[in-house]
Amino acid sequence: MDLLDESLRFRHDIHWSVFMVDEKDSRLASAGPIRGVILDYGEVLCSRPSPEALAEMAGIFGIGEDKFLPIYRSSRNPYDRGDFTGHDYWLEFARRAGVRIHTHQIESLRRMDVQMWSNINQEMTEWLARIHSGGIKTAILSNMQTDMAAHVRKNFAWLSHVDHQIFSCEVRAIKPDPAIYHHSLSMVKTAPSETLFVDDREENIHAARAAGIHGIVFESLAQLRTDLQQLRFPILPGSGVDGNSHIDR
Image 1 (tube, rainbow, N blue to C red):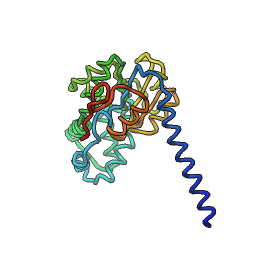
Image 2: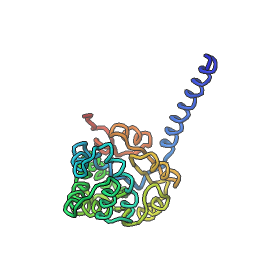
Image 3: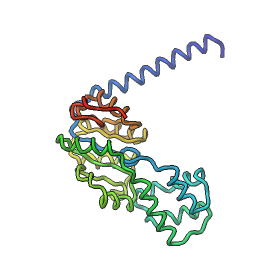
Image 4: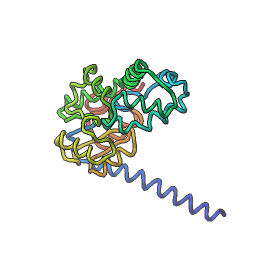
């Protein structure tokens, strides 16, 4: 590639990058009043599993994390959709790993699986509580298996600030299936243009936007605040209702 071609490609890339940023800013700024907020659970309301938790589970099979994670993910969609029981899921995992496991090990894995997804992001649940207190409808929309759904309902007091809990294992559909977004809207009873969805996965946000819902990909609390400010959403995480008392940590 000569310098002229490289220069033209560079100008094209810069133009495209600016267009993409402007498109996002325009989309967020053009939103009307938000009357419903739907939040993902995993890696939004809770933190991602620690390396130590993953290593402990992988150790039951005598494999490393590099082998554990691909197998863990490979059958997760049918598990989250309610096609598998917890017992079935871990038996299938063992088959793929080429390892024999006993019933007591399966029960341990089910408990450990739930526990590693239970490290709650307190700043996010506090924000959720303030949204709810502000009269905005709230919901959780999560790809979640039955053990985890039961654990969340039994153990998390902050769930009282959630008007609707939409768990994939119960509605038998998983994100990014369009059906689960339409179901969520029917539960929250807000128009797509009045609804915000926050999720850590880009493909799930694309699907929400295709349904007309405003979507924000969650990366960090600071990034979420910035996107909410562009959306002119008045209640920001880590702050008072007007967003003026935030203290960075």
